[in-house]
Image (cartoon, rainbow, N blue to C red):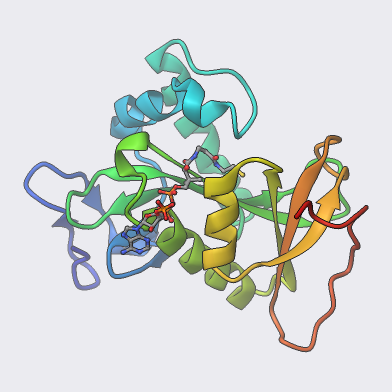
Length: 205
Ligand SMILES: CC(C)(COP(=O)(O)OP(=O)(O)OC[C@H]1O[C@@H](n2cnc3c(N)ncnc32)[C@H](O)[C@@H]1OP(=O)(O)O)[C@@H](O)C(=O)NCCC(=O)NCCS
C-alpha cells in the first residue's frame, strides 16, 4: 500500500519499504519504482533463470553479486534520464517485486525507445505484467515520448499477449535493432500518428 506523501509505508508485514517519491507509475495491484539494493536476492532469483533470460538476452546470473551490481548500475541510469530505466514492478499486496519493467533506447537505433518486461515465474499468469506494462507505457507517452516500441521473438507468445493486452499495434516482422527476425509492436502519444518506421514484412499468421 502506498502511503500519503511524506511518510513511509510497508507493502505488507514482510514487504520492502517504498518511498512515495520514488514511484514511477502505479496501478491497483502494482507499484513501479527503482530496485532497492536489499532486493538483490529477488533480482538474482529472477535473472538466474534460463526460462526468463532466454527471452531477454544475455546469460543467466551465477552469483548474487551480479544482482547487486545490476541494481547499482540501474540507479545512475535513472538520474541521467529519468524517463528511461529498469524498475521493479512491485506487487502491492506483498511488497515483493514481481519482476522488472524497462523503458530504454533501442540498441543501434536512432532514438527509438523500447518498453520491456520480465517477471519471476512465481508471478506469471495473474495479469501483473500487462498491468505494470500498461502503466509504464502510459507514463512514457505522457512524459513526452512520441512513440514507444516493443520487440519480441516471433514465438514469445506470452510477451506477444502482453503487447496485445496493452493495445500496442503489431506492425510486422523487423530485423532492425536486434538483427534477427522479431515482431515489432508500436504505440503512439496521439491517435492520429503514423509509425515513423515500417516493418520488413508482415507478421506470420
Ligand atoms: C512475458 C511475461 C512477463 C508474461 O507473463 P504473463 O504472466 O503471461 O503475463 P501477465 O502478467 O499479463 O498475465 C497474463 C495471464 O494471466 C491471466 N490472468 C489472470 N488474472 C488476470 C487479471 N486479473 N488480468 C489479466 N490477466 C489475468 C491471463 O489470462 C493470462 O493467462 P493466459 O496467458 O493463460 O491467458 C512472462 O512470460 C515472462 O516474464 N517471460 C520471460 C521474459 C520475457 O519473455 N520477457 C519479454 C521479452 S520480449
